[in-house]
Image (tube, rainbow, N blue to C red; front, side, top):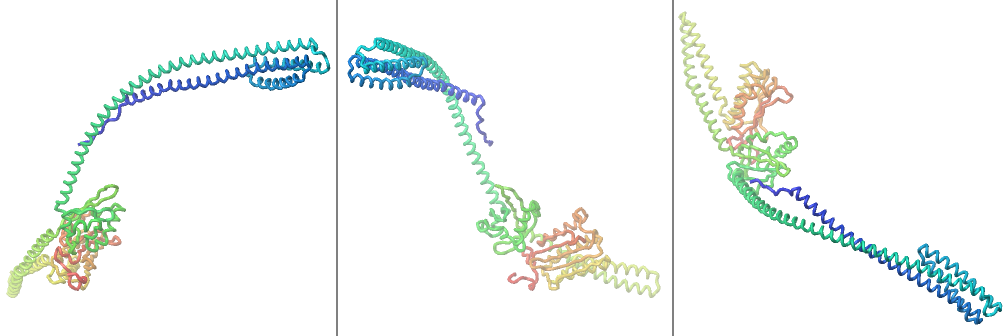
Length: 596
């Protein structure tokens, strides 16, 4: 069942969410503006309070200054009228205070009109101080207490001018205070109006945003409900699919476990990953005895030592000699028994690594039946050969003897039939030779242990004699083969290879060799002809198939290709020694120590 997921959110819903976010941001702008206005209003109020305090300080200082000037004038007049020295002390103190108050009052003024009035006040103060100094000097010079009238009038004029300038300065400061207070009140009204309008806009935007959010929340809740339902459906489908996969896995595992053929998987290093029950029965090992170990454990020598090199070469080059093709190989059971196997190998990739799967079938029984059939056929051929040799051959021999007597008798009498008798004698002699040749062809290998060597030597001699082609035979002198069936198959393979060389190679020389190595018995036929061609008639003919079949019957490996150096064709059949599946062995002196 296919698995589906919920579709993505529609673009319209995304636009709605973006619009609500924009409204929320817009609703925050009036709030921010209100906070800014409130901050500015508070700052403005603080500045206004500072200005009011400043103006009040200016007014206070001007009043104090005017008071001190009056004190100085009174002290001067008192000293003028009385001559009392205490008035001079009060006058000195008043002058000091006037200087300090004048400097402080000048620093407090900020506006140009007020500074202009204060400049005139300073001028008048200097004139007043000058007049007071003159009055004091007149008293010190002994003038009467009334002094000069013009001095008193000038002091009075200056004091009036100071009072006028001070009043004007205070009026300027008052007007400035009133203007700033009015401006502050005006800004405060505008700010209040703006805050009220911003509050209303904020409330409106918040209302719209709240409605949109509520709608969005309802939509999201509905989407969450649908998502939960989809999730529940998906979980149910996943559980159903998981159950199906588990069932398929169990079914597949059951198929593998109950398969009649052995199944073994290995990795790129040749280490066994799995092994089914049929493979356990086939090799006599339990799966846990083999898993984690190299698969060469299940092979006899020399394949055991060569397998890792085969696998590494395939992983490097990708050249397959058995993968996807299948062939007959030898296996070795836990008890050391070597037996024939049909092996089909496939490869697949899992998790980034290559896994090789081998399907194994025991060929012991089939080999036994094939050997039995072949043995029966050979026995029948031998019986026919014996019948031809012992019965028909003897009868033809007798007829040949009688024909010879008849020919001589007719020739002595000078009869005309003597010539026909000679022809009959020749025909009978040829028939006897043909019968003996057929008998040897049906039963070419004698039953003695060295029968294969004898038969191959006869084959080489016959080719040299009849075909006028040099044919040599070479064999290990100590090699004795007890299994006549194996010997017959090896002879037939050599015979077919020689026939192919005679038909297709155009060679002037053929070499036959029988040799024994540590692990195998090997027969080879080499011609010195044109070489091997894949599309030649011999490459796919009946003779080639017959040789392969005979090699398989005895558990051998047949190879056909160009000879070393490219001169001619080399046909080689190698058979593992002491092959128990087909019941043949080498002689006792050829067996390694400890082999039965």
